[in-house]
Length: 128
Image (cartoon, rainbow, N blue to C red):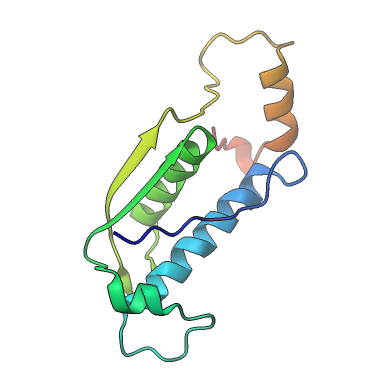
């Protein structure tokens, strides 16, 4: 197994959509190594090219990482990863989600923070 930890920017200094983009960029970077003939990869990592089996890619995360794994899995289902790499499985360990249809105290700290770090998207869409 080869593990690739992703260092993404953190809220509240950075909004949640930007954090998702950081993770997507990292996942695309890993996928860019799946083509052994590609020599044009910036920051090519020999561990990935020499030891990874790109037909068995799992992504995993806990707490906020679980939320990120969920969103990366959903995005990979809609958009192609580099070199058409597929995600074999996803592991969500105690993912953090704030569901809009669950009764939450409007004055709770979690609700206030979420509204600050995750602004509403265009056309009333939500990324919760």
